[in-house]
Amino acid sequence: MHQTLDLKVLYFGTPVVIISSRNPDGTTNLAPMSSAWWLGSSCVLGLGDSAQTAANLRREGECVLNLVPSTLVDAVDRLALTTGSARPSPGKLAMGYRHVPDKFAAAGLSPQPSELVAPDRVAQCPIQLECEISGTFPIGGPDPFATAFTAEVRRAHVEQDLIIAGTRYVDPVAWDPLIMKFCEFFGGGDNIHPSRLAEGWQMPHSRLTPAA
Image 1: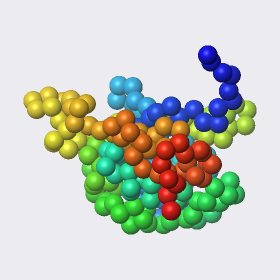
Image 2: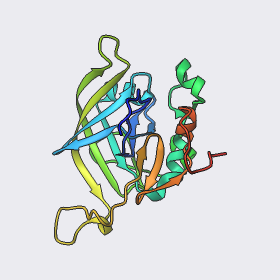
Image 3: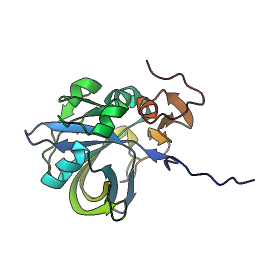
Image 4: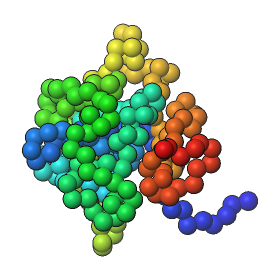
């Protein structure tokens, strides 16, 4: 029997992406997000307007989409509730966000120079997509709170072990993406790690103990 429910979030299961974008001082900002989907060589990214990444994408018009394997869940969780903005919004402060200028160090990740865009790639991510922003669309009706950015993939970098030999295809069996479902982390179909983001959103944890 179905029940009518006013769902708090609609994140039914999407891959986690770490977006690399260029800050005003030329450094690379990292932001994990899961509101991304692809069609052909284009991608749509959904970002809150208060995010430093949103400001960077509007100003610079480019980014790197670093696709995260489930094995990097620790690094992604360390980036949760951090922001590249020196002045976080009141809403983010209330959720526990803090300003972190060096996201690579905070996450324990390594920068890797890009070839076509300014922001660095994340070396540990086996799939990296260098992109150009081609459009922006407000989300939220007459009082927008977020933006959908369209990004065109200009160059893809893929670890050799993930490529089906003799083809231009990623092996779907070898590729195990980190998935976020309702602010919780999943890999291989299992809930694999506590989520600081779920704590910030006051989401109930059904199985895992909240992170310390």
